[in-house]
Image (cartoon, rainbow, N blue to C red; front, side, top):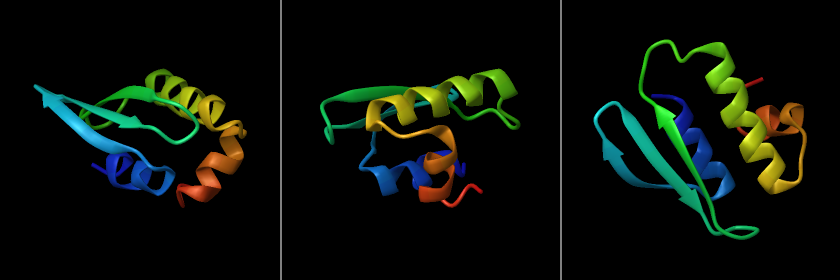
Length: 72
């Protein structure tokens, strides 16, 4: 799954996996948790919401987040 390893570049670590979902968390900039489904493919709206949440936590835009994680 590509999203979890790339989230490590922003300080996220896997904290749990339950079924087809992975929980990640970071303490950079305060504590932040996200749950990423391991579905293939992830629904577009679900992925968009995850990226927006992570970008908002780090105080950056989604485009910058995509650049920092080499998704763009």
